[in-house]
Each structure stands twice: as structure tokens, then as C-alpha cells.
Image (cartoon, rainbow, N blue to C red; front, side, top):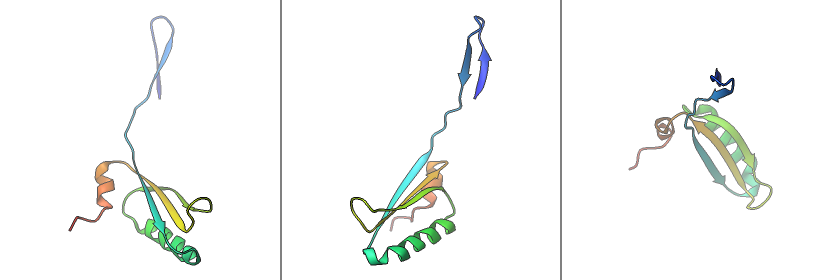
Length: 87
């Protein structure tokens, strides 16, 4: 942010606004396979070419047996790069 003095002494702040794109991926499977699913999700995120990992959670309230992955992307193009081409 950058401040700018106005003639009457009031200071205003200007901020650059940018658009972020987010992806929430939900993986599901049997409860007894959660550790393997979680490890595979971690490996998949480490090998991804785009996106910033914001969080990874395993459910323990509500529907069980799920791993949730949250990532952010700088642009819609970067997000699209992570998607397979339609066949």
C-alpha cells in the first residue's frame, strides 16, 4: 500500500487489487486407506507444476474418509495447466 497526502491533510491509501484463483480438491476413500491417500496427495502436490498449496486436511467431522486440498493460482491459465485436456 502507498499513502498519498491530500490538500486538506487527509491521507489516503491505495492498494493494488489482483484476482486470485483457488482450487479445492476433495479426495475420498475407505477410512483404513486414509494414511496412504494422504501420503499420495502430498506427493501429488509436491510434483505439481503450478499453484501454491494453502492447506491439506483430513476430515474428522462430517463425511469421513476425505482429504481436502486447497491451492491458489496466479491466473486462470495457470489453473488450466493443471487440468487434463478433454478427450
